[in-house]
Length: 469
Image (cartoon, rainbow, N blue to C red; front, side, top):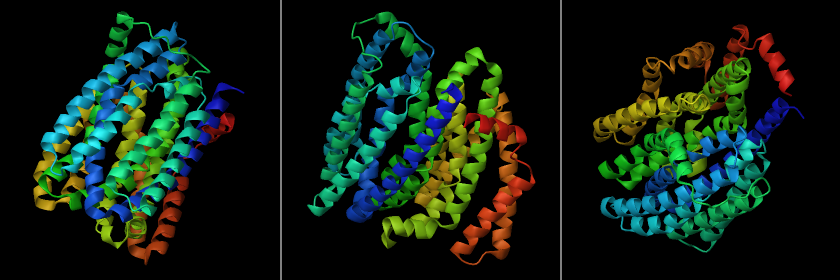
């Protein structure tokens, strides 16, 4: 099997498993919202925000750098992996200590400290996990994809067991820790087929990988701050109810990110390889990714905008109905999320990961400022507007960074046809739409027709796609 066909097969596999995972994830969120209610779900999301940020500090950007080095045939890769695992373990111990202190002193709910202590064990276990890089570099995504699906199924089953036993929020956190730990354990054991980490202390490797990884790690932490800072600020300025409403909308929005990550996990090793050996293929590949990702996510956002209320009620019940307006605002941020994820992987492939750090820092600063300006006046809707505006500001600013400008130009070109199709579609639905089903049907038909009429899909694209499959 050719490399390109293998990548295409990997992409199809990841997209399929991620689609299944999305369905399972939505079912899990539905169970959690109905079981916990607005207040406890808000508390759960507050602690989850801290945990996600801590996990990204521990990851420190090692995963994509490690994937890149393995895919390029790095010598003594067993020593590299072993030393990366040691660095992450020490980083995890320090991070867990700091985050627990923050939760203890800043948390309004006394349960937060207990929940953070439980999650701390999971963060430490996560620190020694590098198996996903091993599989990705060898273009074998089956094992981590199936393991992730198995983890989600197990978690769903365990949550059902907690609900049946009339447990509490603490029990939900414990079963999450169990499911996640099993995923990491089996993933590590299966990755030994490709390489066995050698735990021999090499200071030179520590220094090298910290220098290579810190821009990616800084970007990952800033990226999660960008996603979670609204929840932390909401919890300090409002209450857990507002956090619960906002969080449900954010969760439903973020499920869409699974698809862009599925594509990028599959093609990232190829981008790294082509940039070094075949620049023409590198250019072709990232342009195709930009072009069709923008068209896809714009259509999905359009559909979810029109089905926001029935979707929210179906997942969370009438108690969460107010989250529908938050979802209608937040959903459009996914267009900028897709662009950020794709460009971020490209910057790593071309050894320009510092660009991602600069852009993410600007977005976080804008988001925090807007949160403090808008939340006191508008509550959780202020957090939604802050997120949408701060996400959208990144790309005009990126145009002025020399290394990012060529990609921003192509991103803009890739967005013109979907943007025009969106305007035509919204106008048509406004004039013709009556009811949710008719609105959705009209939107899909008009949007796709405009893209076809504007010849977005070229013969060259079809030739490349046929070649891939």
